[in-house]
Image (cartoon, rainbow, N blue to C red; front, side):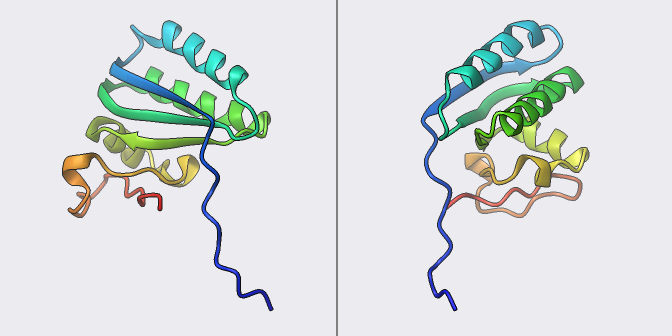
Length: 125
């Protein structure tokens, strides 16, 4: 029997901060940033800070899905370490919290319970 406590995932070596809108109008530029960041990561993976995303549409969500799939293909973890209310709303509405794994709630909402339909992404330890 192994009494060792579960280990938290290792810290990622690269962090990408996305701010402003994550919409179809910004999709091309963001896709290039995401692809470049994923190519430059090593086995420790990539952390996404989405806490400053002001709005997100289906094109932005598709980019996040693409980044997650590409990170899985490359066997390099992608973690959302912070997410704005807009991002959490879309992830919750589409029932994708499990797909993206753990991410903290927005700083102002960290202690409150999520509204129905919102993603409940547990905070990382």
